[in-house]
View 1: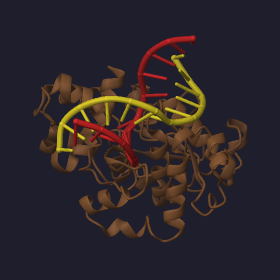
View 2: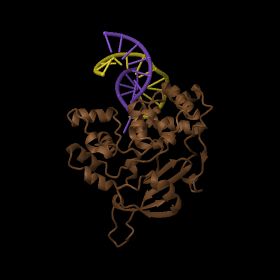
View 3: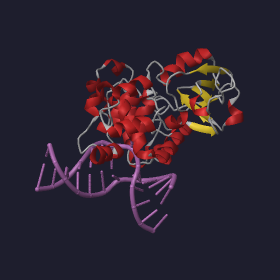
Length: 290
DNA sequence: GTCCAGGTGAGTG
DNA sequence: CACTCACATGGA
């Protein structure tokens, strides 16, 4: 690892990896996590001891020092936005605490989660694929798509020792020649035509994923649903995980179950306003990991 | 083998 | 509107 950095806010790589918002994050060896976005690759591990080294070395979980494989420049330019480092999650947790007992417990359980700001096209396709699939199955399919259509990546020379072949998630242009059978070979099943529709709309200019960044939350949500196979849940996931619309709270089977069993059938997310999406993520994590 | 998975579109009443 | 139902496939 080339560089050492300090992160003051809540930041738990393992929880983020298994949080269900990203499908290509890998723990290459214990405590070393690999992230990919665009054509950038980074390996991160939390340092074993506190930076002070004053003899009272803190536990792994509380060290604020991290080792990263990229330069400080790339970290600031690419990875700080990706990890949403401009937002103070500890502060948000404090502020949203006290409204519901169940939420308070979820926040405590999920402390260290963050909402990643991921690639728009990758999120659109990944969450189209996600419907009626388990998280491991989504990961396999997204990995297969990357391997079939994406650019081969090499990270800092140091990559090959730690990991197998790396591929970027393909751009829409790289998927232009994809056929129904190509996609079905990646395990997409009945979702393959949905992905073809997304490719067609993006390449045809009917859907400008960067251009719609300017839309307000509701208009963005509606625009994404024009793609065949994108309903409310998938659209909200893309709004939250690619466009950082923290007020969007996707309702999947787990969140629906939480609303029924823990909130008396009343959707609590409007109460969390602009942080609803963040709170949703803690509750989703808690439902699956308590 | 059997069950279920971060849903959606189409069809029906 | 509200309510069914089929949908392909892999992982547990």
